[in-house]
Image (cartoon, one colour):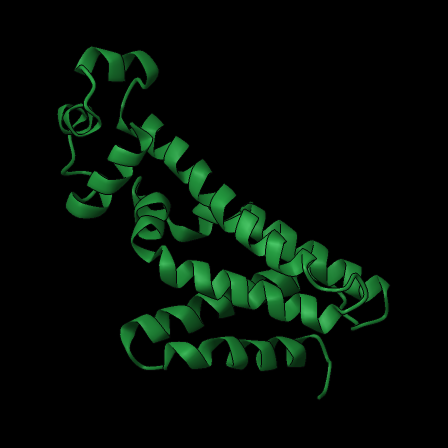
Length: 179
């Protein structure tokens, strides 16, 4: 049901998709769908949770494949995994983030990817890899730089292959690390 809803939300848009269409695409009776989900908003919420889990699985796997004390490598891994996931899942991203008409600033206010980046910055600062006064603020600025860089590539003003390196260089400068 969730997969069918996601596919239809991407193809038709959240607003244009009906519960009847979701039930038919999932090969379930409409009553069965309503047994599990009261409305489309509940489906979208579950879809968003699954989307976030997938993103975080990719990011964690890549970051944790680096040595525990390789802070530059861990930061680069976060960037590469996040960029890859963003480009690969952009249609679903747009549905789950913007589907309820929620301003992006609210949708991402407490996103796990932001908390994870904050922790990465904090842990690196404790290890002496960089110095920052406010890890959360730094993570927010870096996250929005990541989003903006990816969106520029999607709009055609940057080459997608250049985005990870440009972000890595920028993030290191933000953290006060010089090559």
